[in-house]
Length: 344
Image 1 (cartoon, one colour):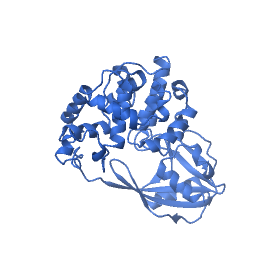
Image 2 (tube, one colour):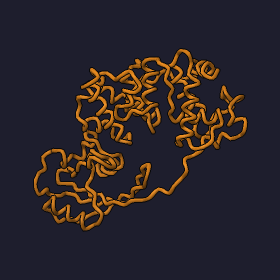
Image 3 (cartoon, one colour):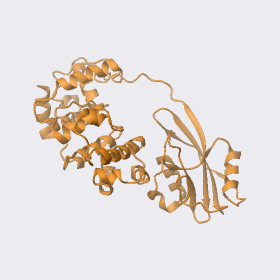
Image 4 (cartoon, rainbow, N blue to C red):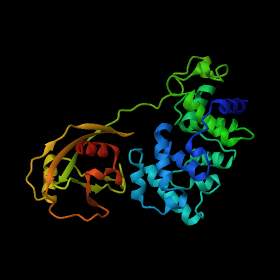
């Protein structure tokens, strides 16, 4: 049986020392599952450990400030995940007695928790028979059963869910969930899978039909548009940079970032509005940052040694922030990298 063979492999070759496995509590499993969305394990581990040190339980996270959460999350990307973590923790602190609920429907009703994430929490933290369907599982099942079509299509996804549930073991559900994720992450990988070492190579349809590189089918491609922005870097004589809070909706929502304008004269007008200086602008090299749905071409314009027209008290919309203290505020990764390059 598929699950029996996979569990035997897991006992010998699976990952047993991941930080969220000891102990495998609902909070730790949930936190790891959210961090692991679109992100590799090696990248997640240091973030997970820092996050857990600052927020050791759900109540401490729910009672925290969103700024503190975003600061720790900075660099991990997909910042909606951090905001959903914060919202879910607050909800659980208020109506679930400081714990994550233990039913699929209640978990899925929380921000940022889908069916597969909810199932992962229930199976790993409570050893309950719930199937998951993350990227590793989709890839493994698509190859093993020779499933055609992009896995994001409703009909294909429905088929994969049925197969995932069919393969559940009678016991050791927590280990099985980790096993199938490990199998996809270490053997049945996206590129260069280790088919010769695979325990299923005598029954895997993709391997037997020489279709491993074809399956799973890729998402139909479409051209990603490119957008342009001018980022205004205003540095005062105390080596502080002007930061603005991003809008509540949209890219990098709620984070601190640099002012953005469309035209150079708007950048100059902003400099004059905020300072009493006549220094010359420095045009820094343009660079690209890619999101899942578009490329952003960033052209930074820098003014140094400015004299602020008036001090901005640290509030919820604007602040002069020390260039030497970038780690104490939640900044988008490309903005932080840009500012770090100026602080050398």
